[in-house]
Image 1 (cartoon, rainbow, N blue to C red):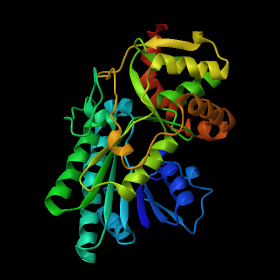
Image 2: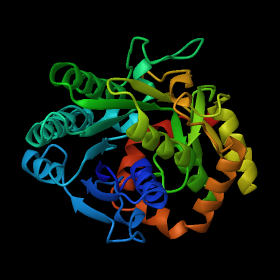
Image 3: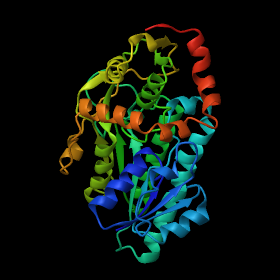
Length: 345
């Protein structure tokens, strides 16, 4: 298969590219805007005969149309991906999550029609469990209503609605994945696990939101990437698929404890800071629809977290380069005032 992977220089996208190249004979074109979270170093060691990186915006219609003509499928990982940043700057999230998704869908539809309606041209939209909003009890199923709580999840939900509309109106062969909280190597240090790992390595404070009892089902990036591949190959057109972790929900406080234990660092580094607005207390997914396709999460959380901590410890040059440029300004805006008013956790 020839695949256009948008956002393929980012965390989950680059892992998908790596694992897809290892498991198949596919060739891949990566389209990535290379903002702060898109890192060409994530692809630097891959076979240039099978993967090509194009720097560009998914909202650039002519560029997207050109690349769509080269491939048989589009997998869209491209997104501004952090809730905190969406609160600081929602405009960027709407441009990528709404206008960008629209351009990709139109390119896929146009190319499908050019080849003839009998040809298979698949579109996979990579979304998030956060579109469901908070889940006080039970587990979210794919046909449940979606109630996003943040600009980030609202943009993701809007992208999903567009995908469904292009499937229903024009018969576009399209699927959606909704992944649980994902962690692993090469994740930008704005997210909880890599932020706390790298801060702890530096003996810097760990800003824990509120009481730290927000509960999440954690999913290793390798499992997430493989799940997207299964949906690309075997998903039923028009359906969404939850990508759950091991099914055991863990509060952020317990994840923090595990990180510190792995690094041999004291709990005194942890500071309780004011929570972010609209912070969902719990997510939980029913992943039975995807498991019916033959996928299952294979990386246990304890082993995956330990390996992730080791990766950041052994790849300081990677994350130090990422924590440069505008990092200090972002960190001050997001955590400066919170840490000033923090308390022991």
